[in-house]
Length: 271
Image 1: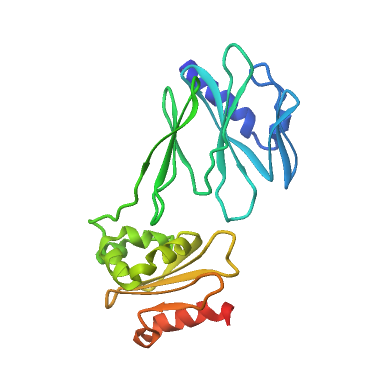
Image 2: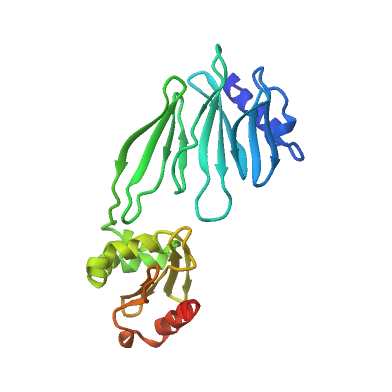
């Protein structure tokens, strides 16, 4: 076993052992690392000094980047409005531990561990570019070029049969469906995107898909629904912005029974 792999295996075993809290790991590369307190006032401490506070704090990755021992963790205010934001602690041979982040993003941030860097990214979604960051021990976090959202020309109504669609915002990645949505929404596309890319989810009922979402932190006053009818390959959508009435496309009289019932159930909270 290589020294790099042995290092990772040993440290992960310490941090993730059953019943062992981060606060129980008293020494880490010559420094005290602890997560203290209770939700919503937890604190990440290094050598008794608080360097980060939030409702939820955790360490999820132990690795070596460019020869420098490194921890990757996440912090969150709790709830489901925003995903957890990553931060990095590195331990250079000389000097004190260095803390970078948390990354300023409400979206889910994925990471790719490389030999000399860590790459972080958020997915591109309708109306919002995907963001990219790179981290190195020498330079810390640096933001790189964003990636614009683009529908996949290879995905269409037939691809729905794979039933991989989960969040309703992902319907815009299906080129055939995105084209129909654009025609339905017209100049209201931006307003619809703002809501449908928020907190939400969906499911298949038979061959049809129903997804709902709401604007982050505004779920009491906003919402959107999308119904994909695979039998006639048509899209039915409705949305409500803050302080406004529900908008329905196409007109509700053109909705068949099943999507109309889904619309009625969804709209009850605003009546």
